[in-house]
Image 1 (cartoon, rainbow, N blue to C red):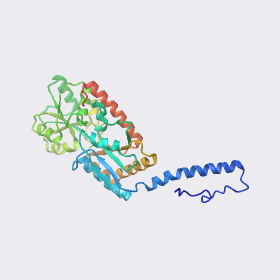
Image 2 (image 1 turned 60 degrees about the vertical axis):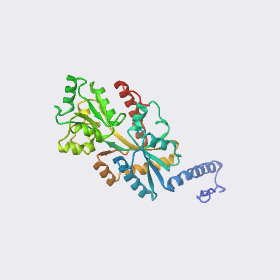
Image 3 (image 1 turned 120 degrees about the vertical axis):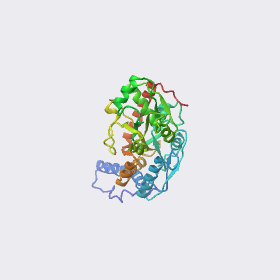
Image 4 (image 1 turned 90 degrees about the vertical axis):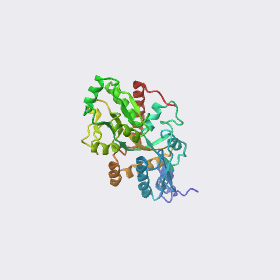
Amino acid sequence: MDTSPSLHAQGIDMTTPSCSPDIRRRQWLAATAALALSPALRAQATYPQKPVRMIVPMPPGGATDGMARLIALKLGERWGQSVVVENRAGAGAIIGTQAVARAAPDGYTFGLVISSHTINPALRSTLPYDTLKDFTPLTQVGSAVIALVAHPSLPVDDVAGLIKLVRAEPGRLEYASLGIGTATHVAGELLKVKAGLDMPHVPYNGSAPAYNDLLPGRLKLGFVILESALPHIQSGRLKLLAIANGQRSPTHPDFPTIGESVPGYEYESIFGFVAPAGLPPDVAQKLSADLIATIKRPDIVRQLNAWGNDVVASTPAQFDAFIRKEIDSTRSVAKSAGIKLMD
């Protein structure tokens, strides 16, 4: 039953004799517009009315899962409703992301996406969803800083020195990444393309096996996540050459960027939130606004910074533009580097 207030209840008397037909018509149109808006306004004011599911495409216990659970907790406190984290890991984050795409577009399911959200469309021949059509971008939470590190025995201390060394002995120096199709892989291939380097890629299945070869010097160079590398950098077992971000990180302003030596170089390991396509605009606006407000909380910012992340908290339009730009950029890198598409 429609419980919208009547025209009379809104103080509009449609029967007043002194009203001309034109005035009455304008009053009727204004009142009708107000009534038409009221269901959307009511929905926005009352959403959410039940627990909301946040899908995380990573296993429980890792840094990404911890960040998602922190945001879920504080968002739930803001709403007075539970935000339940559901881990759906596997297939390079495709399983969890597919679950978001297939969920009902009612605001009660949204999901975390990581760099694979922009890498998979560029490096995989097929996906069970359309990255640009099957989602409603909500916000980019931030980015994890990618670091270019070297073993102390490598006779270079910066990117300029590295480029000189590789050009003098093309194809001899290999670099490690945390796996094929990861952000660290794309970061390495982008350097090769931008600087014109012949530097073979050695993919590892995550950071632990990569460090097993980097720390004793069996491999001299690697692209890794800065936060995991910091203890090794601080102990002197690895040295930092630069970070991949386009600008110096607010959390580590003394660390140089690769772009300072290679103009146009910029790459980040990002994470953000999306919902299924077709989300009602009023629900999308509230969900996005509340996520952004939660991410910008000083305690959240401090914790994300402490975990080695730079906070962005972008608008939906900004996140959508970023996703499109990164897909195009990664496709270009893959083509230039000769990376074969994965199944």
